[in-house]
Image 1 (tube, one colour):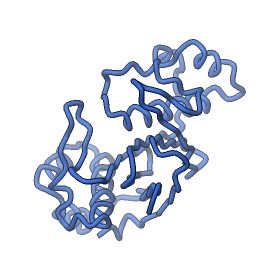
Image 2 (cartoon, one colour):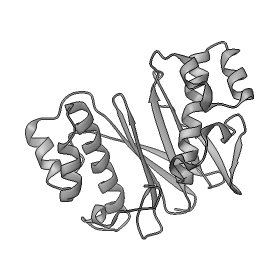
Image 3 (spheres, rainbow, N blue to C red):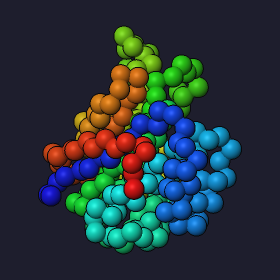
Length: 218
């Protein structure tokens, strides 16, 4: 489908049974299994596992077969990619895990649970206009998370890692230009306690949200 972006997401509402966790784990490449086993908190391990299972489904649905995860490589900046027309990006926060994908461009996605924060600790992330808009907003924390997730989504789409300063991502603009590349962002509404943004180089994409049950991802 032209200009379509699929966002598969699931909600990690409780701990998976040992059977389901191990069943999912065995479906992943050995290298991914080891990364997941290295997490100390079960919540982190489960979020990572569910994210990989969502990605596995995306790749399978794009006709890359059962072993699509084996084809993933990393750019010099650590951005995962696959030698195909598909682009994908994962994000998770709190109970939500999302995997966005498209076969017609590039994208990045970021979700953040709205938690208490010390805004001043993040001053360097924003330029003067952005910071002014945050501190003068009726809801500074909400506005902070809005701009933060826009920046994160754009930087993940651009794929330059930490080489591009976040305060140079003009999150107050509807179209964001980085090194000659134009990005458009979209708000993804899932839950009033979370803020999520998608960034893409696709103009006017059709965005489809598909919720998956965490116990039925295979």
